[in-house]
Image (cartoon, rainbow, N blue to C red; front, side):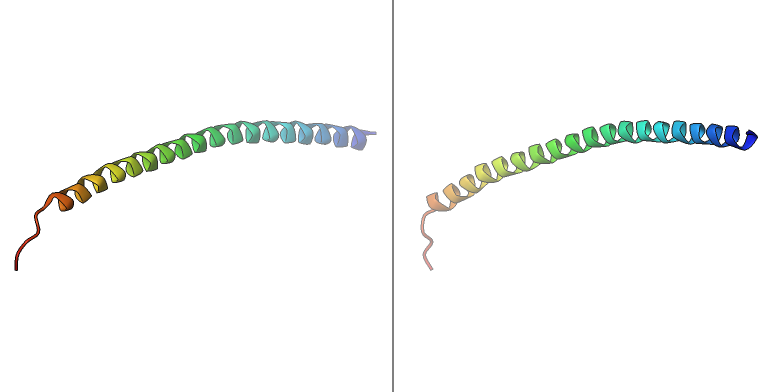
Length: 73
C-alpha cells in the first residue's frame, strides 16, 4: 500500500514537471519566434534600402559617363 502511494506521488510530481517544462518551452518558442520575425523584417528592410540606393547610384554613374565628352588620344 505504501509503495502504491509513493508511486502515485512520484507520478504526480513527474506530470507536474512535464507540464511545467511544456509551458516553459511554449513560452520560449513564442519569444524566439518573435525575435526571429524582427530579424527577418530588419534584414528585408536593409536589403530593400541597399537595392534602392544601388539603383539610384548606378543611374547617376551611368549618366555621368554618358554626359562625358569623348576624349581624344
